[in-house]
Length: 284
Ligand SMILES: [Zn+2]
Image 1 (cartoon, helix red, strand yellow):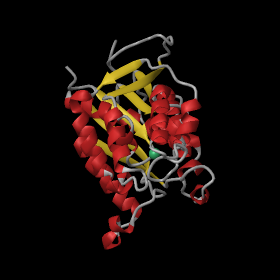
Image 2 (cartoon, protein in one colour):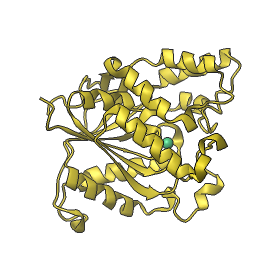
Image 3 (tube, helix red, strand yellow):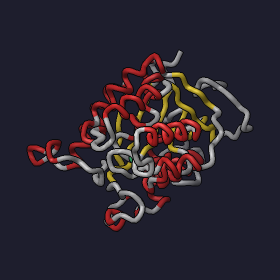
Image 4 (cartoon, protein in one colour):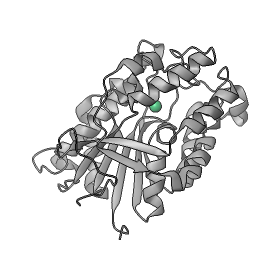
């Protein structure tokens, strides 16, 4: 029943899909839904050990090939790069690069996504929540552009050179429930780890996130049937998932704590906070 259904996921860096909503993408791809991914950058600002850069390949090349590997594991039909440069975390030197994604005007980025939506004609568009999951400036920028593109794609008067109007039916924001993050902070403290510097690039402040407001969890997707695909996709991102100072035990524990569930807020059309569904296509 899902053969002609389509999902477009709009994210910022190679590994965003596997770290975030990858389970959901694989779950629908397995059901015959055509899933495409737009990735704004090639993750050039990520820290990569020299062992991953043999044969003079660049960080961008390395991370693109890691994303293509992950996409294959997840069953994605296409990956489309917007060819911007990873802006790095807020305040980093990478922010100043002329091709840094955050320096691209929002309407230009929006126009590119509108063109892709009008060509691919997805039923559903997925992106980050308004804080970009963990306040990464690129995540926030692509979230704004994806949201604006969802709103503009069906309007013939907007971006008239970007193809014939097409309106996707629903827009969802992927969101990590704050309860999950608060639990992660507790576990990290138990292991004597600094929860303000989480992840390979130490750029995720879990303590700050734990105090953020929650967005409504309108959609609960149980992807436990394809959890293994999310894990193998994550392994493709070897240059990023070598957590260095984070102990392997902690990493394994985090994997066990991962629930096999994703939660999304339905951003459009609007619904009340207590709205609950278990399928992105519910009601379509
Ligand atoms: Zn990212």
